[in-house]
Image (tube, rainbow, N blue to C red):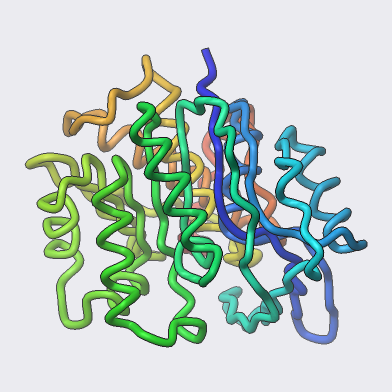
Length: 312
C-alpha cells in the first residue's frame, strides 16, 4: 500500500552546459525528489512556486509525465526560476542560479503520510516560512518528515544562520540526509561520524551522509553502517543525491511494512542504504536528472565493475 507524499520546495529549469551543448531540463532538488518518489509508485504532490509561463508549463508537463501532482497554489505571478549547471570533464556539476522562492501558503495539506523538504525552499526567504509551517503542521498531524539541506553555498549569506535553520528542521524531521559537502559547510572541521552523532543526538531517527565515490554513512540509534558505492559508467552527477533521497524515503516509509519514524535495526539500515545507493547509481549512469522507476530499482544490478563509482 502506497503512502502519499507531499514535497515542499523549489522547481526550476536546469540549463545543462556540457562542452559546446546546452540542454534544458525540469529540475530543482525537491522537484527531483517528488519525481523520484512518483517513479517509485508513491502517490506524490509537489508544493512549489513556478511562473505561469513557458518554463512553468515545461515543469508541470515533466512532473505530470511521472505522475507528480502540482498543487494549484504553486502557480505564481513571478517568472520560473533557472539554474545553470556546467558539467566538467569528470561528470561533476557546478551551478549558478537566477531564482526566487516566494510560494503561496498551503492551507489544506490533505493528511500526507510523508512530507519532504529541503534545499533552497528550506532556507530562502520569504518562502522558508511557508516551508516550516507545512512541516510543523504535518508533523503535528502524524506525517513522517524527511529533510535534505542540499546546501548551495553561493546562495547562503549567513552560514551561522543556515546552521541554525538546518538544526531546527533536522529536529523536526524523522529522516535527514546530507552530502559530505553539506556536512563540511555546516559543521567545518567535524568528522562525518561526529555529524551523524550530532544529528541523532538532536532527535533524528535516521541520518544519512552521502560521500560520493566513497559510498555513504547511515546511522540510526546506536547503529552506524557504511554503504559501499555501486560501480557504473558515470554520465553526469545531476540528480544523484535527489535519487538517493527519494529511494531512501521509499525504502524506509513504503517497503518492508513501512516505518513508524523510530530508530531501525542495523540490518534494515544497511538494506535501505543499499537500495538508495543503487537508485543513485542508475541516475548517474544517465544524462540529466533521469531518476529510476520501481522496475529499474528492482531489476538486476547495474554494477559495471571497472567503471567509475557512483557519486551521490
